[in-house]
Amino acid sequence: MLDRVVRGGLTVALVVGGLVAVAGPADAAVKTFKNCTALNKTYKHGVGKKGAKDKVRGSTKPVTNFHVNTKLYNANKKMDRDKDGVACEKR
Image (cartoon, rainbow, N blue to C red; front, side, top):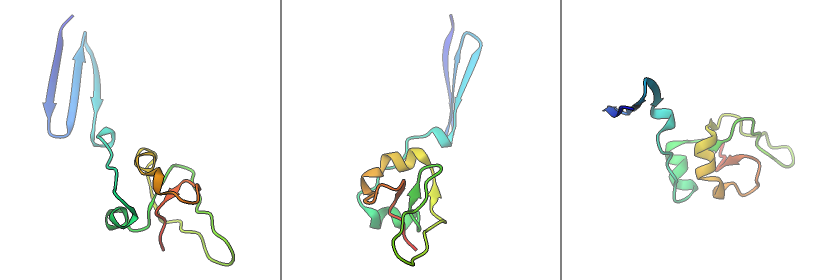
């Protein structure tokens, strides 16, 4: 069985016995931010997992324009204080 690793840019392809598995930028390691201030510099309205909805109280409107990325959310879910699936949500 021939094993060979081919690297180019952000795409890594592993060739094993004629099968090819490709890992692109979406599969790259996700960043863990120190706090919400740092996260909001990159993702202005926060980060949420797929299917998440911002939980609100009273007459305020929920944030709906947060960045959706489950892996990124999971890496930073310690900052989701209300446990609604959206970390660092901000208007």
